[in-house]
Each structure stands twice: as C-alpha cells, then as structure tokens.
Length: 377
Image (tube, rainbow, N blue to C red):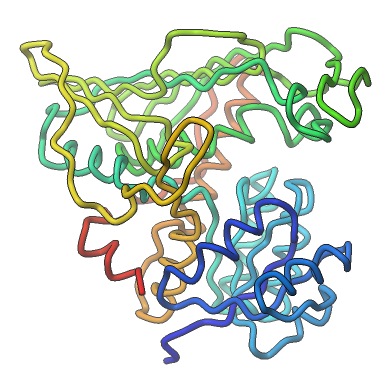
C-alpha cells in the first residue's frame, strides 16, 4: 500500500490553518486540495499553502484525495461526512463527530459497507502530558482508579467570538463544544463509560454580544449552559464532570483522578502539554518526572506563554493506521462512544434519570515516545 495519503480539507476557516501548518510535521499525509462554500476562502488558503482550491464536488471527485478532513460547523458535520464516505473517501472530522447517536451509526454503516475509515478530533489526549498520565496509571502509580472530578467553566464565548450564536443553540453548549476533550481523555485514561446522570440549567435565556463587530446584539440561548454530570465507567470508577458557560471565576483543577494508592492531577485536556502531578498515600503532591515525549515539546507561542500544539496528530495516526492495517487511536468507535456519553448527559438532564449507554469501545493504545516519534517525519 502507498506510504502517503492525499488529504483534502473542506472548511477553510481559522481552524484550517492549524491543519495546513502542522500536517507537514507528520508521516503519511500530504494536503493536496481544499474547498469551502466561500470560494474566496478556499482560494486564499490554497495560495497560502500551495495546494489546489476546488469546489466541494470537485474535491470529492479528486482521485489524488484519499482522506477528507471535515472542518465545517458542527451542524454540517454529519451531512458533509456522509457525502465524503459516499464518494469513497476516508473521513477525519473536527469535533463533535455528529450531533446524535443515530447520525453516527449511519456513518458507521456506510463506512463498513465501503471499507472506509472514520476518525475524529480531539487528538489532544495524544499529547505528552496526557500520555504521561496514562503511563503512570498503567504502571499502577495511583493503584486502581476509583473516582475523579473534572471542571471546564468560563463566562462563555460572546465576549471574544465574532459570531457566537451557534454556541448557544442545540448542537452547541459547553458539553458538546468542550466535553469532547475531557471525555476523550477519560476514555484514554480509564476506558469506556457504562451510564451517566446529569442536572442541566441555563443562567439566562439570552446573551448580549460584547465582541466586535456585533457589540450589543442580543442572541437567544436554547441549550443548557451549565451541566453537572456523573459518569460511571465500566471498570467501576465514578467521575463528576461540570461544564459551564455561567461561571466568571473558580479555583477548580481541570482533571483529578483518585485511586486506591494516590491521586493524579491532569492538566487541561484542551491542550497537548502541561504539568502532571501526583501524590501517594503520603498526600505529598509532586510533579511527575518529565519525559521527552515529542508531543509535549513547546512549538508555539501564545498569550499564556509557550505551548505544545500537535493537532493533526490524530489525523496522522489514522493515516498510518490505514497504511499499516491497525486500529486508529481517534477511531470511530471511540468518538461515537464519546457522542453517546455527551448526548446521554443532555438527555439525562432533560429527563431527570440515569441513562445507560448503548455503545462501548476499548481504550486506545498508549502513545509512548517511540510510537509518537514514528508518526513524525
């Protein structure tokens, strides 16, 4: 089989620059074309990165394209990914994969029929920090994981995003927008979820945009903006997850896991890097010894300081999985299980009862130093 897959990108907004700029770091990938409903956006990206600008129809018919990256808005993820599969090409989607479990099952059916692969972000759990946390758990550093707590909370998006409307409509909200990072990492660290329960609410039925150019415009809120959930894992662990856009400040850590022999403090799953800390039964919290993981090395500057950003690692791992005939870490089964978790949390909040999940998955294979290096050119 070929040692490199041709990649097409549909959706040439801000996130596309990440894929265009980082893809050259990885084996198995060559971006050859891009498309967008806004032709000028596709032409601008094509000129910037030296690829071909096409219509969506032309890209789906392009014989040089083996896998298409779906970077459209969440509401369009399902129909666009379905069209990609029907054109005979593999799909890698930005999160969330779909907005309903039924949509995901339809993609699985088509992919199976056509012997195609589907993968989905987030791939941040492949980062050096989260793989160090995985290694520590796998080696028994805190014993058996029994419980945990996760928090992702802020005032919302309307203060900085130019067009925040979709964040507050069905298909948006903090659980579907930010939850994928936390749930993907929990699956990486603990495994699949058995059932969930939740309470949901919203602080206000409207939001006032304070960013430009729509400063002062009032928009509706039609999805819960505070979700307090509990996840029971197949292995018996129970983890609370609070996701909110109604919180101005707080002192909660992003992710803590508690085991029979200690506790583990995991940095923000939205990012690849960060400091992992742990304590034993002596309660003395210390950083774990750093390791030279390729996806933990700083490669970008940000307003918060140097940062490790290796988004596209999941796409590269999927491409190499197709070439090598193995399981991709950001696989359809895992991302669909994540969709099941998130939509079941919202359903639980709406119906006031625990929801048993109908999907399951395996933990992804750990991505150690050698495995990560094997993905890089």
